[in-house]
Image (tube, rainbow, N blue to C red; front, top):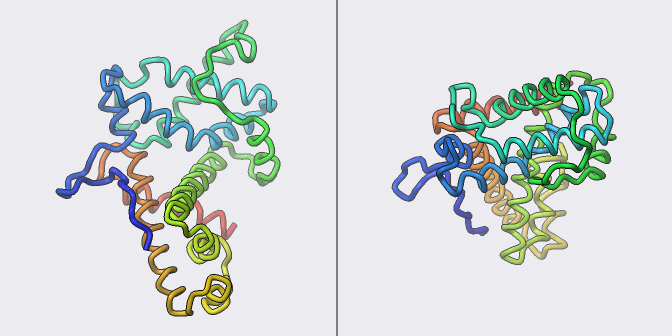
Length: 252
């Protein structure tokens, strides 16, 4: 069994602990040293949906990279959190609204600094971004819709990276790779018996392993969603919304 990592979702006493986003909000004027680190961790996990949002506004790959980088630089450098309001309860919503304001200001500002002229706060892989962007649905012209979908996809990808690391740390990377389709991906994966053969596991053992992986998947998804909302009562609503976004895309 994979040992659960500390997700910071709750303390041993059952009290809701500070999540990444609530730390940032609480920091206000950055007087909590962990606020910048928490914000940067969130930005690194969810930069690609914002990059696509900027591209869908008609920007070239170079300009999209520039604008996304500059947005994160401003976000991490400036005091944007001194006056937190209810609209910032979800990190997903706050980011895209802040990006919209940033883009409007950039378009209005004459003589924008040349690409690469600012200090880089968050390194973006432009080649990887464009390679992924080339695979995005061409018919999906709505930047906001693409952002919401890709935010949900990024969250699931992040969860998978956490699970993969957990299984690798216990010497079971092959088990994770063999079982991951049972929690996300293929609609009709191969049978437990077929899975078990190469892993030297019985059909019953595979069934138990799938059950544990599914349970851990739910735990990590919930913990990661908790990192992006300011209040514990917002977790279930955000979970339902993201599942609905992914479901609607699958059946489109």
